[in-house]
Length: 178
Image (cartoon, rainbow, N blue to C red; front, side):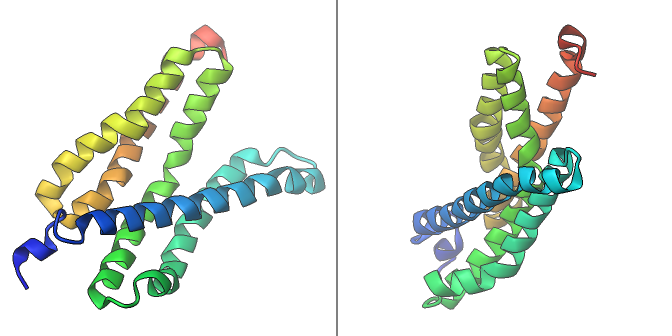
């Protein structure tokens, strides 16, 4: 086996990236939707607004769920290849950390849309979904190899959190929200 087979763009590179991204994205979308539907249900029974707590709970649950179920999920889809299964498990475990931070960028974009500030909303989305990810995908694999590819989304989300927090602080007086 040559070293080219282990490179991020090796013979199975595109398939590996597509599989990991699709698995993580589908799991997150299903889990977020299920939890979003439960938020009002719990709020009614507690008599309080639990949305802030629920966002954190959903993020932690998503990360833990992917951490726990990925071995079985990877076995179903790529169990025919031991190396691909191990790589998939490691990739999803690294990627799932990003789920802890993605909510703030999503919230920030939606928040500024609600305030009719489309420019800041679009800027947060663009930076979060494209610029920061492309930047990190170009830098981190040079440092960490294939793990840098999976870590790129984590660092991009962290950068998005910092930028969104900056925008929230910057515009707080203009919109008087805190």
